[in-house]
Image (cartoon, rainbow, N blue to C red; front, top):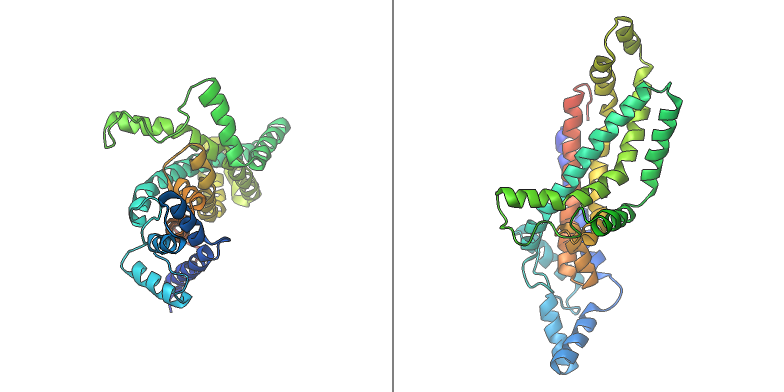
Length: 328
């Protein structure tokens, strides 16, 4: 079997295992959610517990008396037809929720990752090249370590207090102004960019330090290579040496980390998007946990894992493009 097909096969196995884990994990949540929902219905509608329990089972589309393997077969059969079930609380298909929420999360994470990777790489490259300036090296290293040590949701709360509440420079929550019409029009696009500033800043501040230190270490290794000394001996300008010789080779080891960073952003979106009431996957993930909407939770877990697998493939392709000598 060719290597690329082995990669696709392992990805398919990963997704299938993720389906199994998410299916059993959600159903292993502590507490009897059918009982809790039946109790709520009983109090709200003054029904008998048995009647309320039957209503709760229909709402969740889940009957504890059905063997777990039969439930799993039905679930996989639904997945084969693109059916992730219906949200218990919102009463709409999970696929519709994900289709509307996923672009917001991808937009937020992609922009944040691009900015943090670009700025962190540039700063790390410059500091490594100017390592003889002790105070610059120490200051940047300290700032980078500090940004890594502070959780992103703490940074988000600080930004809200300073920039949204005290200074009132940016909006407190939401993805766009409620008085604008969603679509490809200038007011809506500007509103989306304006509302994304604080969430993006939260991601960037919490991740830029890692890229800075990683690029600094990678560039320091490249600086010891003979071809760098040859380039300096030829009298090439520092700008050309940085971009063509050091930067191009030092960035290659950082590329695989892009997929990991994207996955970390997806996981932290639960906090960031809930803090800013941003209508992405993380917001609905928190909603599903808080309301015990296990159908929605199950669908979001599966989609998140699929996205991580896809991002790993994209990182591999970019890695091959940057260095054709690499055999993944």
